[in-house]
Length: 77
Image (cartoon, rainbow, N blue to C red):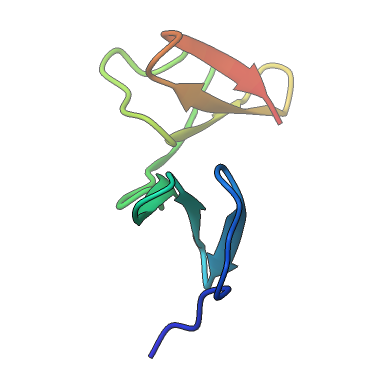
């Protein structure tokens, strides 16, 4: 059973496991959602159809990147 603060302020957050909840003044809403899947790619070029949270290791540079679908970019880890 989840335990939330009794008298939260608006935008107050609490984290249970890997999910953070935010109080909207009426109810607790999920603030962040865990990535349901994460695929790891290794190649010299990024994958053509990545999904949010995927990891790509550039084998030419040995650097790792996470894919952020909202921005449509690979971000170095």
